[in-house]
Image (cartoon, one colour):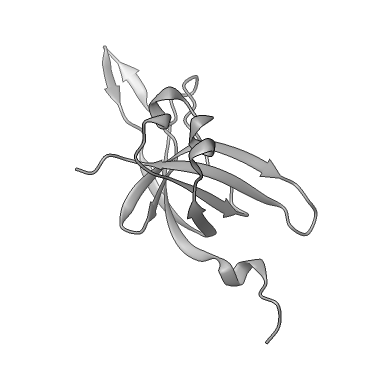
Length: 119
């Protein structure tokens, strides 16, 4: 048995991605939602990692770290694009932070997501 490669520790994850919304006559219309599947390693976020997020995100009841070769997006107020949402363990998680790690053979993104309120 050899040393596992990073992909052996990854799982398929569904990402909900949103197009920019728009305003017309004072009414907001949300952008279209699409779903894509990515390979990712998901781990629990440490409390100190959540402390570095926005005040609203800091109040989240749970957070996860997502490592992937695929870019995940945070919200962009200037373009009206919502943050990506990841479906994992039967829950919806919203991307709050993304960093890029461009090391040659191990290039990847690290994202932190917080669990959305349960309906």
